[in-house]
Image (cartoon, rainbow, N blue to C red; front, side, top):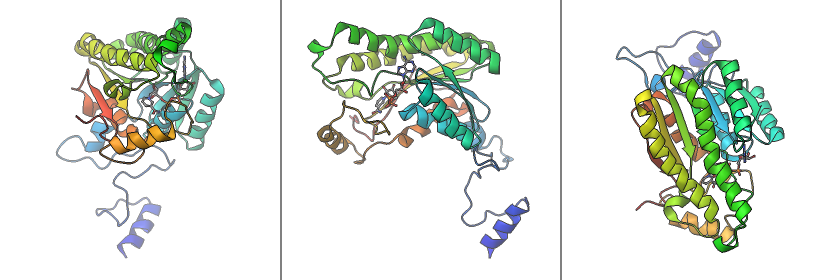
Length: 301
Ligand SMILES: NC(=O)c1ccc[n+]([C@@H]2O[C@H](COP(=O)([O-])OP(=O)(O)OC[C@H]3O[C@@H](n4cnc5c(N)ncnc54)[C@H](O)[C@@H]3O)[C@@H](O)[C@H]2O)c1
């Protein structure tokens, strides 16, 4: 009975003083995307206020596929304006269409994070369109296209290209977003590194070296930017299975990795979105320079 009354009341737009059976804690808004804050507590800010990213301007690099695409969907569903800064425009546009179909807000800005002019155009475009940036997620990397080889067989040009995209890229993006964050006296930089840095994994040394550098960069940048209200943190995912096939984890390695985890199942992109949302929200305001590992406990000491 309560359930039926709840459905009728919701259709009439009436407020209920009780929680109808089966109702979500955070109801989705009428457009089907974006989380509505729950009623204000008389005790102060609500949990949803602390964790909200609604209306935040969030730049996500390399978001045409894989983890970046999952992050775009999450932030758009939470009511943010997302900028998809991606080199592969076709893929980026496909993600933009997915978000528009769900009435979310995402815009593509063709960007090569390894190219300073391209990154500066991204900064100028974000400033022109929004006048600010709240969150930068340095996610783009040379990753799923990598071949595995012993380190002494990695061609120098490939080594340099991986470091250029995976280390210089986040540096250039942070430099481009900094003036906008400084103006607001707040900002969040989230660097997507890798749990492989802790574990050590053979046969793609350039990649591991680049992600270790990103963790060091996170810690030092956090020290420089803390006084300005800008936090810098890293997320270290374990081997995460996206829609993209790759050669860096063979089926046998996948089995071995899952067996090492405390939670013995393959990691999915959805396993990472909670920690990234948290780092983007006010709830993590006093946390900076940290490297958060999300790998089902594979690297748990
Ligand atoms: N999937 C995993 O198992 C895993 C594990 C640990 C860390 N990570 C990290 O998470 C991030 C995303 O991983 P993924 O699996 O989605 O990778 P992916 O290779 O599937 O996607 C990378 C994206 O970055 C884009 N990109 C590459 N070079 C670029 C450039 N110069 N400028 C702009 N965009 C560029 C690509 O076009 C692609 O869309 C990467 O930083 C990766 O190193 C992934």
